[in-house]
Amino acid sequence: MQRELEIIERLEKEQQIDLQGLEILITTQDEAAVGELAKRARETAQSIYGNKVYIRGLIEFTNYCKNDCLYCGIRRSNGNAERYRLSEEQILSCCATGYELGFRTFVLQGGEDAYFTDERICTLVAQIKKEYPDCAVTLSFGEKSRESYQAYFDAGADRYLLRHETANEAHYRELHPAEMSLKNRKRCLRDLKEIGYQTGCGFMVGSPYQTVETLYEDLMFIKELQPEMVGIGPFIPQKDTPFGDKEAGTMEMTLRLLSIIRLLHPHVLLPATTALGTIHPKGREKGILAGANVVMPNLSPVDVRDKYRLYDNKICTGDEAAECRYCMQRRMESIGYEVVTDRGDFIA
Ligand code: 5AD
Ligand code: FES
Image (cartoon, rainbow, N blue to C red; front, side, top):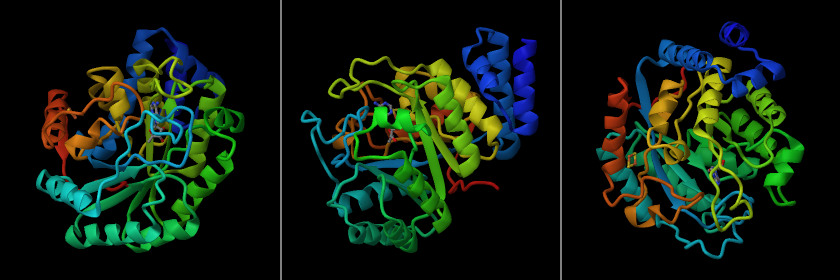
């Protein structure tokens, strides 16, 4: 435990870790050390955000995608994916339902779908901001030009989520088709920050070919980018993809990384993701107890929820639109946390 404790203390006091320290923290079998890591991360989150968990309403508005990422169930080559896109009215109606339920952040997430031109996105964002001026709009639909990001921002968008997926060049190429590059992904993230978005990066835990070294690069990338949000969740194979037979990431590893990220970058908005809730029934609760402070219940129309299948066995495909909202509240209360409905901006 002594060895682990020294690494955890350096993380907490100096927000620093080295490769060897990371290796020890993600491989140690010492349960007391793992408990201490989660405890320090949880206390750090509480010292900034209290026992509050922010909720974001997730609207999965299109599963058409021009990309072909090897891990993803909505990749263009997946002929088994049943494609859908929501109309502008459907999206606005999700926001209306969400607002009634107390959501003050709407996350518009989707594949890279050419139907949604900059003009359509800008009209939509402006409409949402006009109807709900007290709400934050978060966008998450992949790589765009700087001009496009600027246009959405000018239309009123507040935040953008774009996971970097891995900060290692060779690893990036193993996860993506040749036409995609880490260089462009990083360009997007820098543009988003410069434009003034609250920006989120992130990666999957246990993705194929991930190593301690690539994870270390992910952490160093986070330190360098200083994102307002970081999204991580376990890799979960989707059977119609080239990675359908690969092993899933684990909850334990995801929890340790959530804690490490919290200590390394204390103010970050850190969700306990749906993927974490998918690999373990109490995954999201455990994520909060390991230092996460955001949850993103599903607000998509119920008839499309099971079509937005990035990975297999995804949860929250219930038949009641409001179900996730109250389910989440109960879950958070069960561990002594309070769901809050303000915008929940980054606290600098
Ligand atoms: N397992 C877990 N997460 C996945 N994502 C895509 N496919 C999978 C999968 N099979 C994640 C990616 C992407 C985010 C929207 O979902 O990290 O950025
Ligand atoms: Fe979606 Fe529980 S949060 S069903």
